[in-house]
Amino acid sequence: MCSARHRDTNSTIHADVPVKNLSSALVTGATGFIGSALVRRLLAEKFEVACLVRGSSRNLSALAGLSGVKVIAVPSFHTEQLKPALAGTSVEVVFNLASYGVHQEHRDPQQLIDGNLGILTHVLEATSRWPMRKFIHASSCSEYGSPRPSKSGVSEAEPLRPVSLYGAAKTASFVYGNALASTFGIPFVALRLFGVFGPGETRQRLVPYLIQRLQREESAELTPGEQVRDFLYIDDVIDAFLAAAQEQGLEPGRAYNVCSGQPVRVREIGEAVADAIQKPRRLLHWGKRAYREDEPEWLVGDNSQFKRATSWRPQLSLNRGIQRMIEALSLEAPASQENIR
Image (cartoon, rainbow, N blue to C red):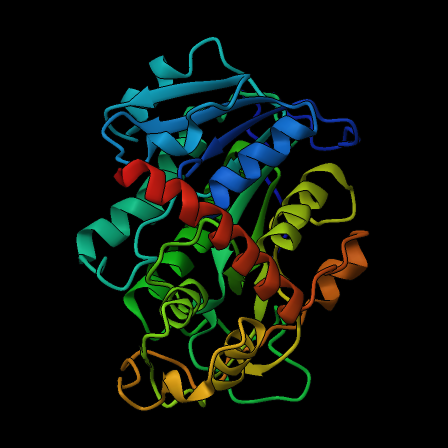
């Protein structure tokens, strides 16, 4: 991937300034699973945090009670709406986590384009004159499509051959966004995320679905479970975003895999959850659901390039991450019951 950057003489560039000790950030997608976790971590690290959100978002409660957050609500993410809304705002790092299509029911073709390529383009245009030090874009392993099984995992050198519409939209976002950032002289880096899990996921996702069903001793209807995946706990993912922003080893214009590098079958994940909460494995009804047509059989990443470029290393095992999710969901349950009364 060519990493040369062309500088726009009308823009202010600080790409060569050391990025340690950053103190301000803008986050898009801040009401989502990963975005809200990133915001909380940035606040804990004493960042000044601005969150760019749609005023119509139904998930604004994810930011409620977070002291020190500047919420910038806009009717849409079009450039002409963003520029006046962001007037007077300037930060050192932008984290773009806004996306459409993560959930299986979100497959409208136009919204996939608007909610991925469109948002990234408009945010880059609206912030192009900021003296930012990094623009961190959340990319996706779905951009690789269905790579062949390998002992070493999928590296960043693997061709981008998406098989899903979501993967295609994310690929287009990375390629076009990277080129556009280059014309503005914006130091653009993409983190290609694999299977992120942890507290805050929607209840339909694999691990929270399994925990909820098994805790109630209800059967969980699943695919045959032979697909091999790469799961990484949310805390390790947030550590990766902070490392990408604060460390100098990443090359602008490139994408880096953020993953565990450990292959695990979906069947093994189900069994690990059942064992962790001491429920019988017979509640796992494998084969009750069909595989998705665009679902790869094998998708495991190689994180060596990101580890070489930064001090980041995954800290939590899959089993420890599952245990933390069980504990977090157990704490949520009593509060939920109180709200019902």
